[in-house]
Length: 331
Image 1 (cartoon, rainbow, N blue to C red):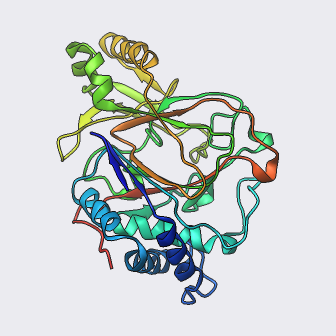
Image 2 (image 1 turned 90 degrees about the vertical axis):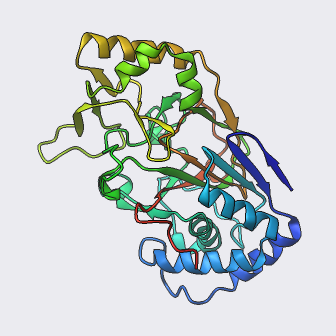
Image 3 (image 1 turned 90 degrees about the horizontal axis):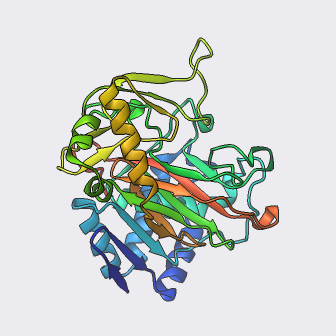
């Protein structure tokens, strides 16, 4: 049932548990007209309740273990989806009322992992869930709606605050979580742990990356500031240490600038070494859940040719954070 590796676990849900959980989630009546953006606590609570009642003890134990000692990423497979097939959205957004079951699964797992979902008002219209789906008008953009250009190694929202005491609404997202709706194109997400990258870097480069000698600007998916300029942050490090002792990194190609000669050299050295590392491909397919630590892992996606629009690759992403005051309640 469970496969483990040093940085992650892959958990496969048995068919019988998938069917039982799916039937129970389909039968939830307490949501009313709520969608995640208007009733996130309902989705967290009822999703976690039904998953606790119907997932095998081994799976629940593994989630509890991750909750208290998280690896850099975690993948689950064979989770229940919508009662009826839902076409891939063509223009970025879709009718959330058709996706109650996958939303209950998504938020229920986040609750079981002790995490809290979060959205940012300046991107994705401030919504909790981003549909990672190809949009023809965005084909060549470097966003989750694009597909014709590579999304190279990067950290999401690297322009935000990295400090451990930063308010969650202003901090670099701790985690990216995904539910797979379909991925018949078999397009992976490549993951590169920061500690793997650091093993390839000279010590002097890592030291320079820790100095507050960099400026970072926001990606294309962000809106601009009040003066119409791209959001930016100056005088920040690229590399730092998390409270749990793990190294963390902010990076996005073309988004960072060194403010000193040493910083410029360190950035170039990091990019040179990162380009030579293959990372680990993770395939999020229909019924899959995947989460990784956005500060401990760089990620990328190769260009691909989508299937016809209704069947094109479709993942649903939600940012999440771990409350500094302690783990989010499970029940």
